[in-house]
Image (tube, rainbow, N blue to C red; front, side):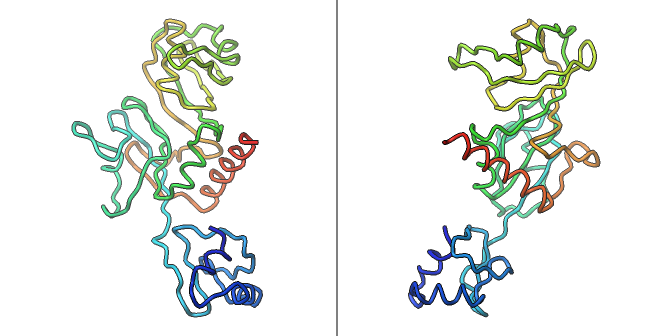
Length: 243
């Protein structure tokens, strides 16, 4: 919620007092003096008034994982190892996935405990580009390039896919950029041309590329700039799409 409304919820702070405290620079959010009452206070924000701690957020966590083939994109599973099993983090940390990858798909996966941030990335209106490396069973028909760019009709959902960008790198190897995430979308798109996908690897989400230093199963914390870049793009595009 807005900072001024957050402060106003405390019995000893009326509207006039809130305005004065903000104007005098007595309020800090996450260690930074904040004078704008419209600033956002989130679950993870640490809010202080002088030396008084008003909220001590648990801290947001953001991770990039190199998902291996054979690991499930889920928090729990009865039969397979999950992506959370690969993280050496406190069990009490309530992480969830910002998007998913199929069991036999590898590559970039994002995990966080910040629901607002993950929704800004994975919401249907975010249009975050997702880049995949694709290996196929037979040679790729050059006609795929134009058809993918136009959009394919999926009868099951009664919809046409958004325009996608296909770059054929070799007869059975391509790079595909999608702006949505339909059920088994890549496999179904190539299946339209009777071509089976035998290898699928996500290289990038938005401006964030999978760190080449990460081996399958390894992960690292995102930098503040990486978090901001992904979240800002997602929020901006979502807002634009809602107008």
